[in-house]
Amino acid sequence: MEQVKRYAFEGEVIEVPLRWDEGAQTYVEDYKSVIENPIYSPSGRPVLLTIEDACPYTDMADDNPDSIDCGSCRHYHQFPGSLLGVCRNEQRRSGVKPKRTKARAKKEDTT
Ligand code: SF4
Image 1 (tube, rainbow, N blue to C red):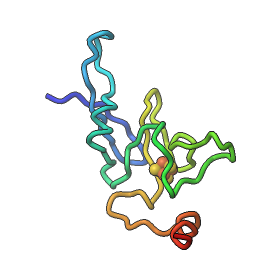
Image 2: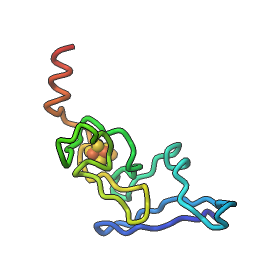
Image 3: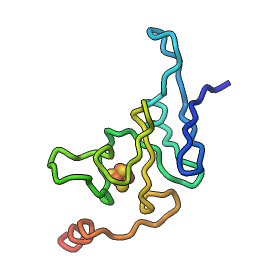
């Protein structure tokens, strides 16, 4: 039976796979599995590592040039005690066709 950890977020239950850690002698979140097999909330929100590169639809929480990942984005909600979280950006929801952002439009118009 597959081991999972469940997080409740905005009325949804999100399941994260676990793996047995021999050294710690306990189950830990299986980040490698999440990278290889991306998971989504039941309504299609992506579950991402906080260190994932920011996407073109990011809205950074500050102007710090070092802010380059999902963990720095206003759309990201990190699970407590985890390196995973949910992206709340509607543009990233599974099945939603992304709109052109200003940055993306500028890039596309100059190429
Ligand atoms: S919009 Fe979502 S995927 Fe894009 S940077 Fe923000 S949290 Fe990450």
